[in-house]
Length: 254
Image: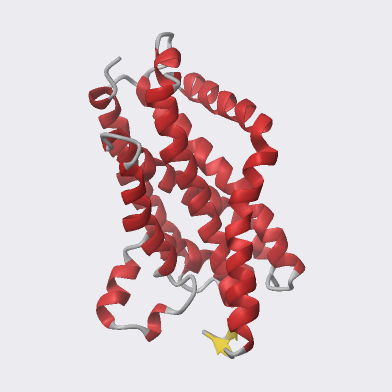
């Protein structure tokens, strides 16, 4: 693997940003419709029948969880389908790699861009949470940082699966078997403290569980145990990042 170059990585991020600006109005609807739908159906609907959950109203519980879920899904969309098109159909990776930009540079740039995309859509949904009165602490200003870390982590994870996918259809298996279960069983819609011990243990290994915990803690000003969540996310991010960075030159032979 060639040494990563910051200038080249920045070029990849800038290219993605310029492309995103042209499609922002199209991208905003699918990225925000799902969490708002869950919020209305479960937060407002089911929430009227559910009382306190983990010491907070269910509407607040699910709204803060959906902020993290929005970040994960925004990153997943960018690092799977969008990345596959750039790798194999539009040949964007090939065009960029014919110059001084290496394939590992592109991977890192794409993952960081996925993190930025998570910040954009996660923060937009966070504004909804703010309007609903579910954020009560100035520590919430640090939530975009959590969104970036979460989005970058899932960006690297999605790129790893995309590089290994023999066809675009295989990305559906990743979303159905990895992303959707994480979305449902990562303390997002119900507390893991009330489920079977084996499911609790599985949920603990989900990066989204720790992102949700961080966001709820920051939104409420409860910082107890949050350093452990942050360190866990950083460690997993660094480990997962090595996979697509080292895999890309073996899988993409133009």
